[in-house]
Length: 134
Image (cartoon, rainbow, N blue to C red; front, top):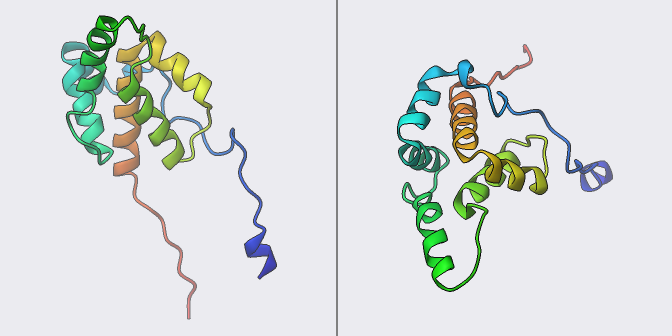
């Protein structure tokens, strides 16, 4: 009982790596083309696949204009960053908030494509359950 109560916690870098790299567009050409030709549509699809409102990524498009009107600079896409962190934490993928911020700022398009590939992989990978023989 005490071993259950005091189970070892996983550290911030625990877990597994992303299924594909940030610049691994050739791993899934369909996701890459979808993101290249209509990145806002891909972002809305990723949000929906993760169980969030499909229109959530549109905040990333509108937020720089609204915040700059009030004199507040904004360079981090809030919805993209939130979804990236949420996906990383849900599937226990290695990484940190600093890496998520850098990824979301450096290449928004590549980040959305990576998230789409990850969700497609996670949603299509069957779970293996071993039952002991009686």
